[in-house]
Length: 320
Ligand code: BMA
Image (cartoon, rainbow, N blue to C red; front, side):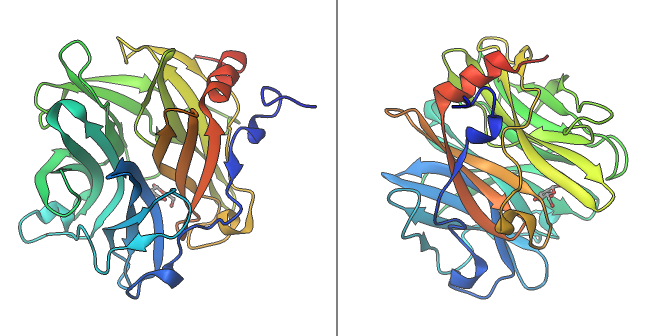
């Protein structure tokens, strides 16, 4: 039998009921539902789903399920809608959230892309109950996306992973790390991981997927890598491991991708060949990881993996 170390594409197993959420079952008319953040809340799995309306703009809506797989209960109207009157950066919608529970503050931090007149940027909202939200406004200017906090302070500082785009939307883009005292003002920006070059699968752009996961070996980072081909881009997923006490240090980075578009619902949709995870839920007893991902910018799907198998694969396939 071929081990997962020799077959990275065996690490993540798609759920047989995929896609788990589609526009057809939404309680109100929408175009697509994708790129959801994920967390556990009140004993349930909660997804904060990016929903694109019939004007092409996105808002966020909560869907809950007891087991994270079946019987989703979807809020009957947008849970967090853009508020451009008070937050002009949300003019053209809010997208691609990441949720991190900040134990020390007893609240959930939601970092999301606000699509401003000047381009996409990173905004922050805090909540305790997913009903009332305290917006903190834009925390990083254009063009920036794919940001999430680490769930705890490290040596007295908050850390944020983010992905600025240095030129126009087609330029190469890398993953950065920033520090803050208060979650709102970010500085000491450092380049954390670069897109590879040439023929590599992650040679064009890379960006954080779900928020970093704390493990005994380091912070496990699942990141998307983009390769541009004649017929468009392919979004796939790779792994990296950061030092627990110094997250600016990359200990390992997978050479191969570990998850990419293969099924019909991943290969066909509004944006073909985009597997785009923004949320992960870890079962701390079984060490099973539920990866929630938008498929082809059209629907939501889930795949499961074993945490120790991912770490073992990283030991085997690493390059930094
Ligand atoms: C990225 C983001 C995602 C999207 C992906 C594929 O730049 O905008 O929201 O899923 O492109 O279209």
